[in-house]
Image (cartoon, rainbow, N blue to C red; front, side, top):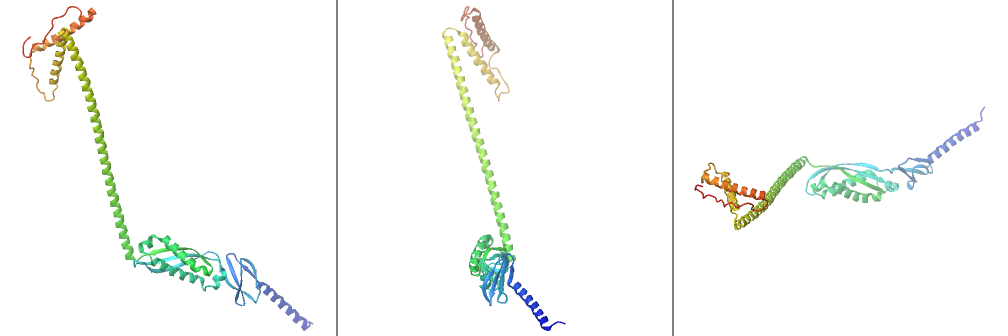
Length: 333
């Protein structure tokens, strides 16, 4: 038979042990990585528990806020913005932020995420409303930078760091988008026309340069040809002068054969020139056949005299032949 007092003490001991275990468990808190827990004592901030095991006094201390200290992202909802030139556009974005001071983020602002969204949306309207539509569409980096500078300064008292603010979409009205498309098409057609005209201009310049070079080269060729023709005529004149001097010397020494040879050569060349004339279709001999025969006889006499001189081995060897003269033109020999 059990004693009632002992049974009651046993039950009390069991309840006491359970109470102690539960109290110890309530005083130990495990904080996961990337979070910070604020501890409140009688409703007042006491300390911050970092990742790992933390100790608090049960029934006196309690966990106030579980703060995420990792970098977080918030989508900024779409809103209508009126630009400086009274164009209405729809804008949305995204903000990346991180809590650096858990107590300030917990007790300096109520509903941190809602406060960040309202702050970003307000500054988007302020920054983009001070810009023209063209500047708005072409200077997104400038908009992001200005927004980040303003918002980062504003959230600093909350223990929050704004890392990046990005504008995702800027959507103009349909009619404005159509006007921009037509403007862009006209601008591209203008650039194409300018490029085509520039190409035609360059082609004309290159063709003119080619013609210029051809004319220069042609002039250079004519100049060189004229110079060489003049040189040839000069040499021919020198040769004729030398031949005339030799004939004059031979005549002065009494050798009429050289004179006959000289006259016969000129005579034959004159006939050849007449025969090869481009406009000459019919050739009429203005002299008698006997005159031509006499001329040829004179040339033969000169040749015989030269051969006789070579045979005797002395100049003018043998006896001198009587000078042979050409018959006058139009007469008989």
